[in-house]
Structure formats: C-alpha cells, structure tokens
Image (cartoon, rainbow, N blue to C red; front, side, top):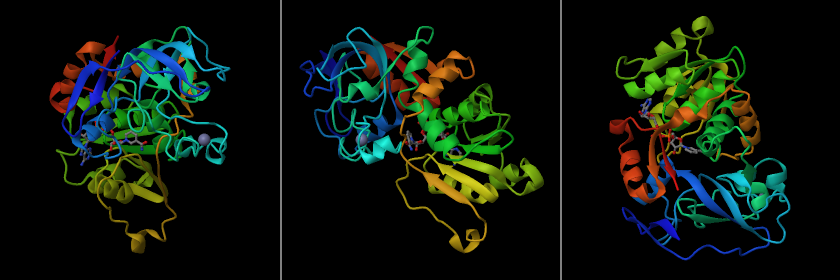
Length: 349
Ligand code: NAD
Ligand code: ZN
C-alpha cells in the first residue's frame, strides 16, 4: 500500500510500504476512505515529538471500511463503515473504566498511539488495536467529512474545553484562539446555550468564529487590553465565567486566568512548550478552577447524535479537499494555514 511516512524532522514521503496485518485478536484492518491533518502532525514534522521515529506512518484521524477483523472482535465486522477514534483504549483497565481512556494502561499509559507510537491513518490501510472500542459505526445520513471531525477535533474542543470548563446555558465564555480546536469549542459551547466571545488576531478565523456560533469577537490586533474587553462583555464586569485556552502560549494562558470572574474556570486545551505564570498570591482567594488534559474522545457518540439532530455542523471545518495521493500538497496548504485561509484539509482515497 501507499502511506505518508515520517523520515525525521522536516522529512516525509508518500511511498510504498507493506500492508498492515492483524497482530492481536482484538485488531482490525480498515481501508481509509478519508483522512485529515492535525496541528500535532506539524509538531511531529518539526521534531517536537521525539517519540515519533523514522519510518512511522503519520495521522490519527480517519473514516474507512473494515476489511479484516481479529477473532476476538465482537462489535465490528468486515464491511462496516467506521470513524477511527484518535484514542486507542482497552476499556478494561482502571483508567478506561473511569473514563480516562487517554491514559489507558494496557495501551501504554497514553491512548494517543496512531501516528505516534504505531502506524497511523494517513495511508491506504491502517491496523486498529482494540478495534471494538476504537471504531465508531458511521450512521446513515452522516457524511464522511462530518464523521472524520469526530476522530479528534470535535471531542477535543468539547471535552477539554467545554466539559472540563463546565460550560452551561447562560455562561459567558471566552475562547482564546480560533483555530480548529478553538472553533470546535465554540461550536459545542454555543450548542449548550452559552454566550461565546472568540479572541484571535486572524481576521478570517474571527469571521469563521461567528459562523461557528460566536456571539462576539475580539481582534487582538485592535486592542491592547483583551482582558478589559472581555470583562466589559461579562456579567457585572467581573470577568467571564469560563475562559478556554486554545493556543498554547504563556501569554494566552495568562489572558485566560486574568479574564475570569471569582469562581470562574480556565479550561486549558493548548499544548504548551514553555512554563506559564500562575499568580497564586492573587488567585488563592478567588475560588477558581483550572483544568487541562489530553482528549479522551469518549464523547464521539454524543457528538454524533448532535450531528444527526442538526445541532452542530462539523462539515464547516473543511476548507480544502485533496485526493489521498496528493497528501504532500495537502500538507503544504495546511502548513501555511494562515495564508491559505485553511482550517481542516481533507484527503479522500
Ligand atoms: P492553530 O495553531 O490552528 O490555532 C491557534 C489559533 O490561535 C490561531 O488561529 C492563531 O491565530 C491564534 N493565536 C495565536 N496567538 C494568539 C494570541 N496571542 N491571542 C489569541 N489568539 C492567538 O491550532 P489548533 O489546531 O486550533 O490547536 C490549538 C491548540 O490545541 C494547540 O496548542 C494544539 O496543539 C492543542 N491541542 C490540544 C489537544 C489536547 O488534547 N489537549 C488536542 C489537539 C490540539
Ligand atoms: Zn485501558
């Protein structure tokens, strides 16, 4: 088969590799129909994720058709059209049974293994461990483009942003960063009935934020007091109820901490590479909550229901479409997302 293979920082190729085989009785093989590129794939290509080694097939998002199952698969069958979850999980260990599938102990302590510790989905075929748990049937009436957003992006914004932030109807929520992850938080937060203010410096993304449901936007290039602008839009002027960090920079984490009211919540989604300031001498008295974590992707079925009910429209993420064998061009477009007005770049086999 053909696959997108990582060859060390800065190097990748669409090349011929051996077909994957069933290795464990709980494995399945899926023929990829559609896949996409995540910001994490760009981090890997920069060399930021050293666990990814030369020869690894990248990608952790996809929709496809099951072509082979191991003898212990009881839920998935050959011919099923499925969404591939970015999180691999045994559903038996203590972490999985408590819903923390992102730390499945049988998978090695971190549930994100596709395109990381094992070969991923940017290929014609992929081996899926614990296939009964990691493959979600794609219902009639849900398109592949809608389904592929449930592999990672929508659960990430929803679980680590909206759920961890305990966003509810009536809350005023700041979403700092309106990239795909921030937009996923905006889409799922507005579906709860919250009022959402999007913060970004990119005009296209701020426009998109409104189409994803944001009630208001703040352009960081147009003010030097983002926190003041957020407080002005909050109830009593005390600060927003929830601030969702969807960038991954010290400055945006600080914005979030500064912008919440007493009793407020910061839900950090961003992946950080540098330490942040936490002013405990100011905030010990403020009864705040700060959460952070890796997506569990356990809400995909719930989000699927929201799609079939027409409450969320994840196809809005798709800005560019390529054939799977044009994946190098797709990476080129996605890596210049700001110039290309790109959000999610889709490849179809
Ligand atoms: P992205 O780079 O596409 O989007 C980030 C956005 O932040 C951009 O639109 C950019 O213009 C904006 N931005 C930059 N500086 C800003 C500032 N000072 N103030 C306001 N906005 C600013 O990234 P993405 O794909 O949307 O992902 C967002 C973050 O979520 C990344 O750090 C990513 O690694 C992380 N992530 C976390 C998880 C998880 O499980 N926790 C999963 C996936 C991605
Ligand atoms: Zn487990």
